Length: 187
Picture 1 (cartoon, rainbow, N blue to C red):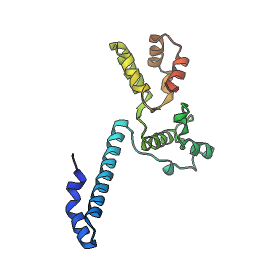
Picture 2 (picture 1 turned 90 degrees about the horizontal axis):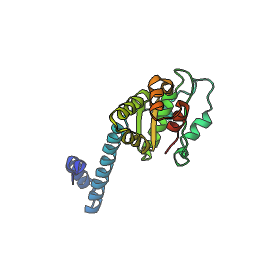
Picture 3 (picture 1 turned 90 degrees about the vertical axis):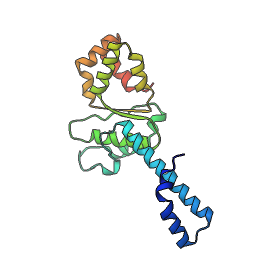
Picture 4 (picture 1 turned 180 degrees about the vertical axis):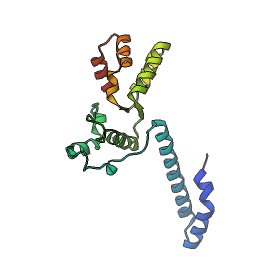
C-alpha cells in the first residue's frame, strides 16, 4: 500500500498525539482519516485532468446580474443533477458572452463531484476525432468512448453546422439534423 499521507504526516501527528494525550486508537484513526482524505484529493485532481476541464467553474461563481434575462430557478434546478437519471440533456443556447460555457462547466463539475464519468471536449474536437476514426475504420470504438460517459460536455454547439459534421452524417447515412439529435441524446 502506498500510504503517502501517513508517511508525510506521521511524525507531526505523533507530536500532536503526545501533546493532546491521544490513545493509540485515536492516533491511528486520525492518521488513517488523513490518508483517506489525501487519496480523495488526489483522485479528484486525477479525474479533473482526465475530464479535460478547461478550468473549474462553479454555480456560486456565476454572475447572475448578466445576462439580464435568465431563469435562475431553472438553472439552479439543473444542479440537482436529476437530468442524468432521466437521460435528458441540458443545452445552453444564447449569444456570445452570456455564460453558457461557465454554466456548462459548473454543471459538469457538479456531476463530476458526484462521481460521474465526464469528458469536456469542443464540438470540433469531437468531430475531428470521429472523422479520423471513421477514416481509420475505428468509428465504433470512438463512438463508444463518448457513449459510455455519464456526461459529455460539448462546447460550441454551432460547430454541428460545420462541413465536417455534415460529412460525418453522410458517412453514417443519416441527416445532419438527426445526427445532431442523436448526439444530444444519451445512449
